[in-house]
Length: 308
Image (cartoon, rainbow, N blue to C red; front, side):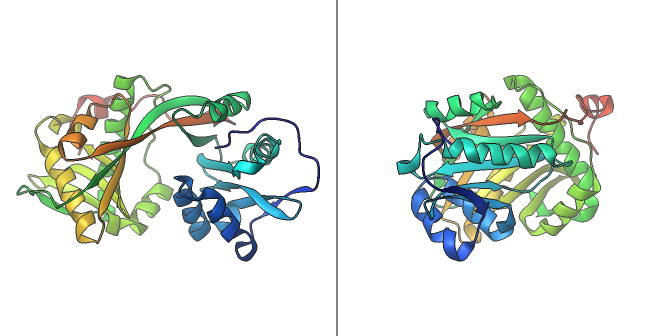
């Protein structure tokens, strides 16, 4: 997200759709080693029509990107250092607000701001965002871990409902513990089910007595959405499953494994014990355009019973 404020710049500022042949090299150069380079490259690969650029005097100086137009739209704004505090970020934010507020599918926009970047946070607060929670980015580099004798297989379509409920309940309860509000349960839906099926090669389930006990996702070298069924937590299953997933990333050629963990989540102690180190702290910010339509609490039987 941006760290800009100020009046509109003098000269010729145009915001228009991204043209890879013209803009890609300029954006990669302005990002340099910034963590947002991965966000941009993913958008460029999957959704290049959801990227817009700000061109000042015929030079590409900033970009705006979305990860799609759905319930939760990840929004990224970045302005080249030498063009900051000229109002370019405000112009891109106005563009984002106009597009997201008019899209029937979008309920909220989210973005990420690095810890210590007070200018960006002030800019975001000014434009209606608030900090939802903070998350550590962690990395592990090194040899594979010893694996336990556990049963793990790739996700199958028939697993959808139980996998969805395992991580929805696990993350709902974690959010409640660390004080992330509002916390919601999102019921299963066919759009998500189709997306899971298309990505099945990167989704894994761990079985205990032939029943799904834990779920997790691999995205390149990133580990995410690791969740253990609530009634089986604190028994060592999480450690065994995470070790398997780390080793799977290494088997696929990854040298550094990354993950995000919410600040205050006790799972950080598990990750540290497996060799992960904190790399940075990011703040996730949110702006609502429409009321959130998810249920405020999971069905009572999921909270009190065994998920199956």
